[in-house]
Amino acid sequence: MRDGAEGDFADFYSATWPRTLAVVYALTGDRGTAEEVAQEAYVKAWSHWNKVSRYDQPSAWVRQVATRLAVSRWRRSRVAATWLSRQRDHETAPPPDETTTALVRALQEIPEAQRRAIVLHHLADLTVAEVARIERCPVGTVKARLSRGRTALAALLSDQPADEPNGAPTHV
Image (cartoon, rainbow, N blue to C red; front, side):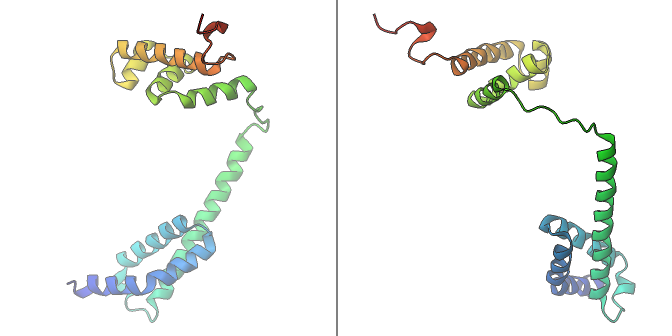
């Protein structure tokens, strides 16, 4: 059982947390942000607990600190968003073409290890040795993944039915 200042603060925290969180949540509209801000306010309260505990309404002090922290966070995010919008090119990227969309869909269909090898080697232009270093596996393993992945992609991207490789019937 806790006693002294730690026990007093623990009791205070338990009793006041729901209301503090509700106030900050109402300000931010995001529960995760509200929890972070409220926790930060309680950290400040704990670091000044000898003084704060003597206030008539220490819970009001915590809510005021949390409110100020939420407003400061909102202002910082607005300033950052404004700065970013000024730094960014205002041209938008064109949407992906049909080939890119088909490739991405096909990549999602093959095993993850093969997908990583193909993307790193063919799209990120890394050598087989660099892919092996990143994947922490032998070069031969990367080569096998590339080979199997290309074969699987070829089948997925082919216009021909799976039972007729190269357009030839499978039975004679």
